[in-house]
Image (cartoon, chains in turn brown, cyan):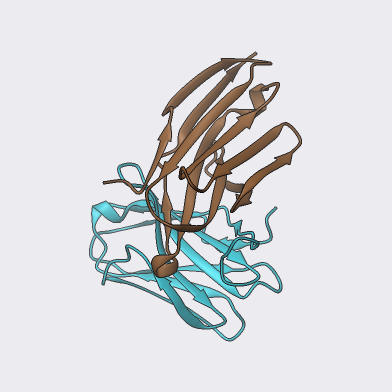
Length: 109
Length: 115
């Protein structure tokens, strides 16, 4: 049983398309993170949120605590957005992180 | 550059051996987190230290241990290594204990290969 489910697992888009990656979780959380992992392996934290919506440039993250669901949107996608996007939640109980299996995004020029 | 330094970047060792992975957090960060990323398990949280004390424990095997030193760097010790321990090991740091307003910064990882 996975505490965090992401969809889709793989996503291919044309440059310029609007992209949505979804994350659902089953535990009570104090925070949710969206991480980006590039082919070289390095991980970057994109967003950390506990309610509402955050925006950085072309990236938007939303969370609905009641529905235990978060979405990551990329507007005007670009080939450099190609990466694996991972949803991670910090559970209230045990102060422990649970991770989704990631969404592999490929943006084609 | 996140400011989090992990060494070594790559490590190849034989089964049964013991290795130590090192993490230097960003200047001023008191919390250090260790994660394991393997092909079949994805990312898994191992353990967290805050200002030298263990704060949270995840799926960390008994063969693994960690500590955070007074200068706040941390070491992850892996012993009696098995082939299945081959993975990327990430360290992250944050100013405080993770919560809604505390961002974590990740190191580049140590790729461990057990042969």
